[in-house]
Length: 244
Image (tube, rainbow, N blue to C red; front, side):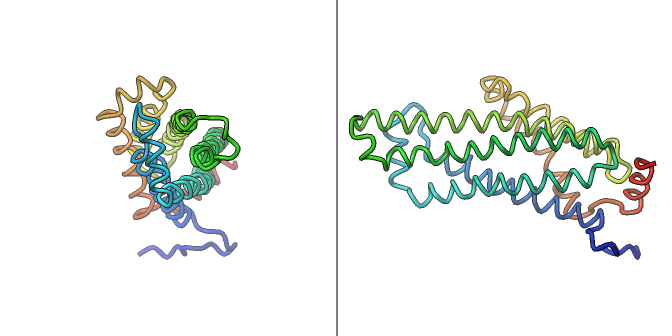
């Protein structure tokens, strides 16, 4: 039985504890972002029908605001996940881990912009006084446009998320404290998300290819981080080697 403490004498979390914190942040980010952007917004948006989409937003206002809050929380949890993964994987490559962190922070900034665009349709639909010169159909069309922009912004975020996944996968493959197969699968997942550079292609490939790539890359990583964590001794050995 290992005698390595969960917390170092310095008061900092051990690598194994960091891994489990990363896994928790990943689970929270995936749950909140998916609920807000995919489930809620997807249930309110009616493709090609501005009036129906606007009617759904007004009729389900509480659900809409819940989705907005969930979307914003997703960005916060993603920042936490990215920072913890940076410290966890830094021994495997300082420059690569720094580049990966920079890429995902840009992605998280886009996530926040996406949340702003998320709330815009409600602002438009509730801003009757400011838009009094617009007809009802024009107001609905403007709200619908913001819903579409939200979708495009989220697709843009997925490109940076994919880049981060690919770089993180490379770092895991370089590490001596996590299984290389996790890194290979995560890299495949990341390359898949990066196809959102051309959204029509990505949407065409999503079912079943991108969905499968995401599942085989991200779910095993999540389970490994939460259950197994990392090997503390090997992490410290690689950290010492990198410092030397």
